[in-house]
Image (cartoon, rainbow, N blue to C red; front, side, top):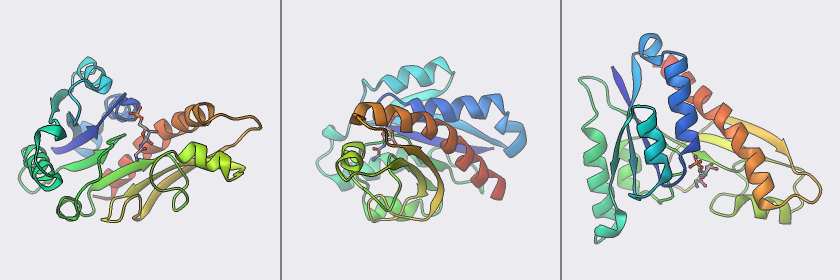
Length: 197
Ligand code: GAR
């Protein structure tokens, strides 16, 4: 069985979409893969309760209790690697995980570390993507699922979804429109990866 580890920091709606797809579509039988655990860097992340409702194990690891980014990433790596099975390293999905990861961490999971970012990369890496798209006068916005490389919000694109930016849009309205698409493309992109392996 291949274990999928999902890292979150907040509401976890993308995590929920992936968990539901995995359960509904029986990824265990189809791909010998299952979402094994959801790990948050915030103990009060709402997504932890959501994961538990779906019967998924949860853990939290508070980055504030570590002296350095390296120390946190090393501890996180240790937690994740407990989910390795013989010949089967875990697939690690960032789903609203709001931490910059060190190159050591990223390289350790090269090719099996995936992120979803709420913009049409390579446009608008970083934060406040929706407001920046509105301010730039973009007529379309969207989301990108990509393999993670050491450079923030870069790396090979696995899937994208496009939505219109509507007249009078606020960042919140645009974010909600993009998020519904995120919930569609992230599970499909993960499924494509599982199919290839
Ligand atoms: C999503 O919009 C995701 O694309 C974004 O955070 C939100 C998390 O929502 N991720 C980033 O901004 C990463 N830089 P969720 O917790 O409900 O899935």
